[in-house]
Length: 220
Image (cartoon, rainbow, N blue to C red; front, side):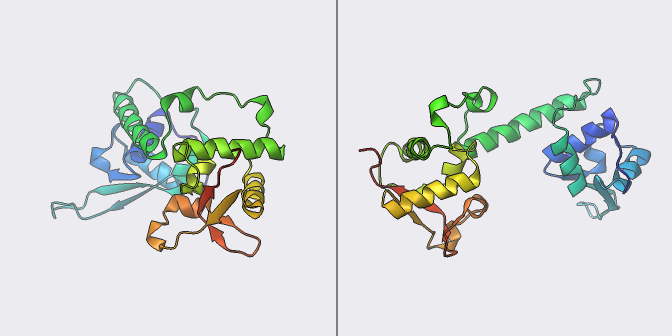
């Protein structure tokens, strides 16, 4: 596959597919994707195009899918300027904001945290165990409503401490666990384990998986 630089109109098509969840019927995509552009994007591995039976059962229109290469191109070019000459840009922006809103509610992230994050305090350097332990406690109590011995998902804790390297945070959590300050557990019910929990799992030196943490009155 030969790398290409998509045209402004083709970039809008890639974004339109992305905000639609990665796929759409060609006739529903705006701006209209001409056959030449469709073939070009497909040849570059950015999209997949195939004829499929229409939902109505009549005809076989073109169905477009954003390929892995397309997702990767968008992720690597988030700073690209979208053309405003096409009305499609407004619709794409509107759908993107709705998707962002859904993510923020699910991840419990405020708009201020996203657009104007506070700079990390100098005294909270993750390289110092005492400071990092305090940051872990602060993040934990923010998630537990200020109460000790409340179950907190490691996925949520990692999100609060996203600037701390994973290995550094894991090492600190294991220290807190071994000292009795914290207790790390796995979910007993596999149905409770979601994709974010699998991504955030902590593995002990023995190879056991941990998904949740209880902090036992740290700093009291």
